[in-house]
Length: 600
Image (cartoon, rainbow, N blue to C red; front, side, top):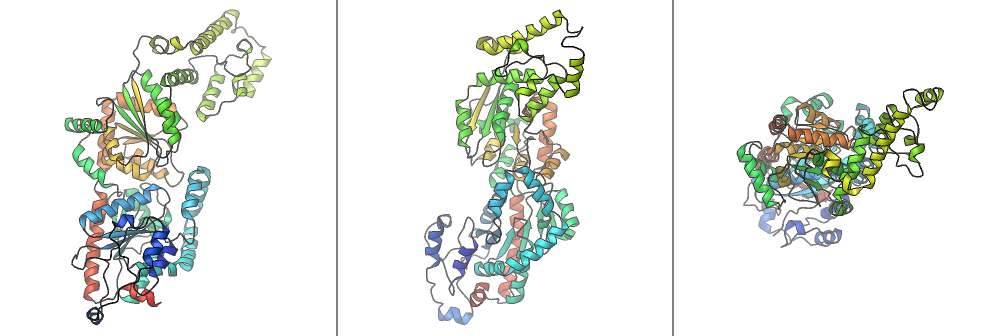
């Protein structure tokens, strides 16, 4: 029997093939997911000749349905999106899963309507790797002037093609989860309704939390689902979207989080802690009762993860905290291998010395190549301050370590002579003693790595670092974790909130994700420390682990903003509206729009 297939993303050329012929149908006994492994499979399937209508079907004015005609609740859902980051696709898949649970027999397609006109995935990949360029691009395009120009241009260039795609696919409902696929598809649906008399409802699901691009807010949709008050206000201000069309409901996240949130309950309760321990055992973690940090850098494992992990390790060890650090490396196999093979004692040794210098605990640093310690200027006062700036920026130059500070300070030192009264022979000997101590700690592995040399008599923490690849059960890892260290992606933030997990944000895309940082700070379930300051990140994490009262506040606030069932609620609202329109269209005896499409 014919089936309405699930396709990763259909391109314009693919849809043209689907629409070729009078009434092309796709027949397969395979699961829908396996139908389109590549374009060759797509071409071969779309060449299948359709069966002719029976006389009785022709007399009744009906055509073959792509769904079981006995199943009145099944529907065909067309998602509009593009592969620009993992969030849009994840939202589509989350909603699709709920449609299939709530309305068995339903099927879906993901369609990129702008692929043939603008290479959005390629452009996004480049710009997201160059934040300065992204910031300029976002600010220029997120304006009323650009909105008007882009609106007119996209309507002129792509509306007719978009309308043909929609008519060829003949969906029951269209759901846009991308800002560049709102205005034109809404116009296309309206024209199809005028042309055929069949109404195709279209909805927008905004996948941002704190700041949304102006192209999101085209108000020709049935309803617009948003995840926060900030987006609600933007929709009314930027798009003049009526209040009755706005539904604040949360971001659609994976169904696994709804399941885990229900089982977890209150993370800080006794029951919640027992369930967390159960999950840790199921994940085969080496310890079940230790604080656990989950570090993520996006689906590709990007960001300064390696440095952040090293600093977290050092800070936890030095503060005597036994812990586990889980690092999601994504597709970054090089990082995972590096973590697996890393000498953590050496990391502790290096990081502790760097921290000591950065914090001004040592007054001399003479490790520059070809640089004699005895001829070096001592690093004190302004020089230490300059070094801290260099360290925090991740760039250390030999010249920065040799000089006496800023130009004015150097000139002052020069005019006063190489040695002043306060730098007496005794003072110099004191500096040399500290210098020799630092050299001894660097050269002597045993003393530099012992409890006495690092923390006096205080015990060191036992920290285990585990590198993970690309994981599919991230909801379980978020339940197992006590703190999430991540970039400011809206989906990740929403997932963490759904399981009441405090978040420590370390980076964001300028413009697009800045509002997500504000969202977390305003609702007080996390904070932001730039990945250029890994020591600051580690210090905040340690503070949260040590301050139980503060941690409980963060967790409760996260739970208050969590919406683990948002995907289900959105799918249910869209589904009920779609079924009503299906019934109205059937009562009015409207023909399939694909028939008219093939006659154009």
